[in-house]
Image (cartoon, rainbow, N blue to C red):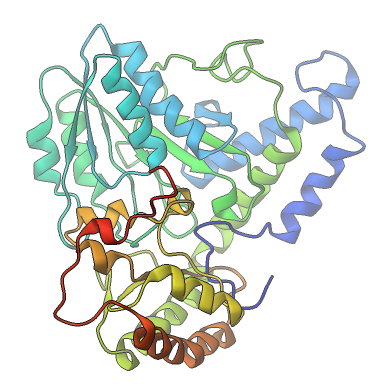
Amino acid sequence: MTKGYLDYQSGMPVDPRVVEAMVPYMTEHCGNPAVLHSVGDPAREAVEQARAQVAALIGAEPSEIVFTSGATEANNLGVKGVAMKLRKKGKHIVSSVIEHRSVITPLKYLEREGFEVTYVPVDAEAFVDPKAVEAAIRDDTILVSIMMANGEVGTIEPVGPIADAARARGVLFHTDVVAAQAWIPIDVTTLPFDLVTLSSNDVYGPKGVGALYIRKGVRVEALIHGGGQENGLRSGTENVPGIVGFGKAAEIAKAEMQGEVERVKPLRDRLMEGILGTIADSTLNGPPDRRLPNNANIRIAFVEGESLLLSLDMEGVQVSSGSACSAKTLEPSYVQLAMGVKHEEAHGSLQFTMGRWTTEEDVDHVLEVLPGIVERLRKMSALKPGMTYDKEDFRDHGHDH
């Protein structure tokens, strides 16, 4: 792992133990799981073993797990699949303004198709109010979709009470747990979740694999049609090596979760305290507690985030300034804007996310180089205390939003 890599939320390295489990299914066990002859048997058995491993991560039954090409597809299947299946019952959905783009964009699509979506706001720490969600539920509401934790600012949402409110009204509840699944124990036998989105890469597995948990009895309309794989909900030949890797990664994550939290959380706290204590006009985005143990999102005033990113990268430190899905645009984080952060302030945020190979030396290196970078950039910056800016001053006119 590259030293100084503190961008685990954007992409986790694949655990070597996961790679070892995958290799045989790229070479000797090359069969298609759907075929009836003996060459397909090992592949089919490996897929079902992985299904059980992924199910165990959240306390589900293996039959309740549908493999997808990633969390984006799983979110689309959960949101659009439910909407299409239940559209005769109702066309109203409740979600929040800070959901991942792979939830918000399908919702915008559904709005164009005649559905109505209520987007519940968040407070200054990015918390969704369960009472606001409950108040938004109507007689024609068919789905509530609220993420378990926000991967950008680290806020852990009160999804238990929200799911309870949805179930009390007979409404299905979907949650994207991608940011939380490596850090927070999840048990769907006690939590009233109907649909749960999971991602391989966010538990140190390979990219391009995800899963949707669908509680037994919940019906979803397929989005991809073909040979009828995954009980007809996700046609296409299974990505056997990827699925095997996801299964192994999920097994390791469940076994080692508590130890990782206990190791990483002090590193995160040390980084947050070090930056906030040494850099003037720096502010924590999100709550000081009830946040993901690996997440430190810090807003540094009077300097632009892109300049901070590039300067840190030159010092061997890799971080983000917002969601990885928004990295191609210079627009500020829609999550932070929803929290009430000013347009110009949101531009100065750094998202540090740690993981399995983060060390004390990585943290110390950031604390050593960041103050000097901030000082240098502030001297060059047009951003000054007491000045106000229009958002057009920050828009990248060469890129579409």
